[in-house]
Image (cartoon, rainbow, N blue to C red; front, side, top):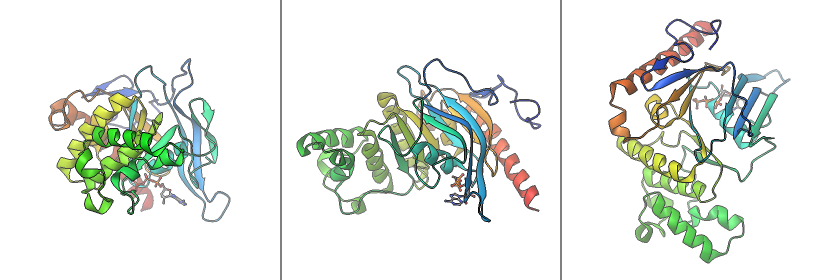
Length: 303
Ligand SMILES: Nc1ncnc2c1ncn2[C@@H]1O[C@H](COP(=O)(O)OP(=O)(O)OP(=O)(O)O)[C@@H](O)[C@H]1O
């Protein structure tokens, strides 16, 4: 962070804050191999050129490197409406977020031109097909790809098991027979079965009760280690982002800019334990203060 950008109470580049360390957001790395995801001075203005034009994110640059055997886990935090979903959908190549108004969004070294099999999404809303069983929901993407029924159902059962559901009891259930946590397990299985390189998660645990949420965080950590994908994870829970993230991006209030990046210690112990530790709490309070300062700036601007 350059001095011109830093506010009082904000740590300097390289400084340790609990389990996190501040990274210089003004000079993204230039890796030798193409990054998994790169934002190069990206601005998104909805309804550009019209009277109702609205700039949601402004001049955002970052690089998420392609690390051997280790997909990074990036938590995205920021005040409500700062453009978090806009960033995710630009990576996904979904309209109307795609295309960016200015700058370039690249995945695996190529500019994004639309959705692709290398990227999978999990949303907060339970997006299962109501009239399909768990097994048919999980295997839907493989069915679309034309994979024969026997093979895809075998894979489907494997993934139902991987996300902690009971294959025998749950595979023929319909979504309305499942709890919220179980439905999100189905959504995760349905995405992971397609082996995307990049997994985009928009508040996937936002509607779950606190205990289920901690269980899902632990599940996600263990699955993510197995699939080695790069994950972008939007959440309003600072604890969740700091626990799950290898790095955490903090955005400013609207229009969203990247105001801080923290490198965070890996989640190598259960969520319920790590989230109680003083060093962990220090990072959470620090990020909380950053976001509160952004909210206050927004309020002051609105008055
Ligand atoms: N299709 C659209 N057309 C016009 N404005 C939009 C559109 N989509 C989003 N916006 C606006 O862009 C801003 C950023 O929206 P976005 O959903 O990316 O923010 P967010 O940080 O994910 O929000 P939240 O935390 O509340 O979920 C908001 O002010 C929103 O109203």
